[in-house]
Image (tube, rainbow over all chains, first blue to last red; front, side, top):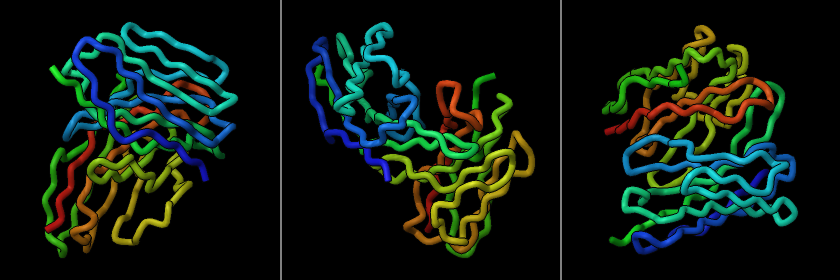
Length: 113
Length: 114
């Protein structure tokens, strides 16, 4: 089956940039997502990228996609303490009437004031 | 309305209880999903309904019983659960095709089994 991998932990100082990396195996993925999850909360979609794009910028967030290497990254500029959370990348395929989303292992981002 | 709602927000139940989790969306989505998420782990798919028919059951024990009474509602009936079933249960919905940009997730029900 599909596999989506992330590093488990990242610590940055407030004001610095954070880069969270993700690798995936499913070459048929159509969309790739970044979700944020704060403690005790549900999943918040941060941004997404269509598989035929290589970059997407949305305010402080920049998503880079290297489809050849199956590598996805999320850069958060000017990281704030409110950005502390677990970040999941996910890839989406499609199979007979439903979207199959596979989540990565999650990266815990700790922002030091 | 781009919202998926889930009730209750929290649920504590004993191993002999019967309870139900509810999920609702009014976005016209015809695919709905149940995920289970343990602490500090990614969500794991449990069930998928497409056009109100069960499409996927990811080898979930029979003590979890899903139901999709109409295109807006998704239930998860719980009976004789075990303490290891304690988790965050997330509902999601999407278009039942490979277009549209995302699955919309509800806030989840945090279940504790005593």
